Amino acid sequence: MCDSRAQVAFKYLLAVYYDARDTLGPREKHDMPSGKVHAACSAVLTPVAFGTAYALSGDHLPAAIAAASGCVLGILLTPDLDQENLGMSERWLIKRTLGLGYVFVMLWYPYSRLLPHRSPWSHLPIVGTLGRLAYMGIFLAIALALGWKPPFIEPELWMSLLGGLALSDAGHWALDTKFGFKRLRPQPRR
Ligand SMILES: [Zn+2]
Image (cartoon, rainbow, N blue to C red; front, top):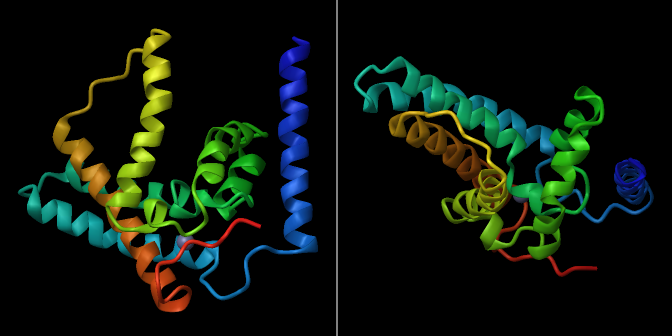
């Protein structure tokens, strides 16, 4: 369909535009941890998520694996999705999924437009995590309305997964607070 071809072209142009803007005039001053540092922080917290969930769930290995997975997922579902610039994980997705990552970028584009970068709504622990879940809930509701039937997953595993994700987000906030913004203050849009 010519429509989908136009969409692909638009996504490509969008990515090129963001890349060019990053290169020519970065919006972010180097006053805060990079995506790599945040990803490393989530990776370091992953065994913590695993161990905590394992202990809290009474040695339930699937719960521990779910918590660890949630923490790793935090690298992708990062609070920095509130940036219009393509993040490290988005670039990775685009490169490694034969361009399918553009879909991810497009889904999160409204989010980045809605929230100023480093807004408490995206960065504050728990609040930011719940906000992103609510945002994803919109697309889930659309998928359900279109007839998609999600596989059943035990509530305990969901809770563990979300706990791991919340831990990753809390680590992100801690790093940003220590190295970047002493006051949690959104950047004005330029
Ligand atoms: Zn951040």
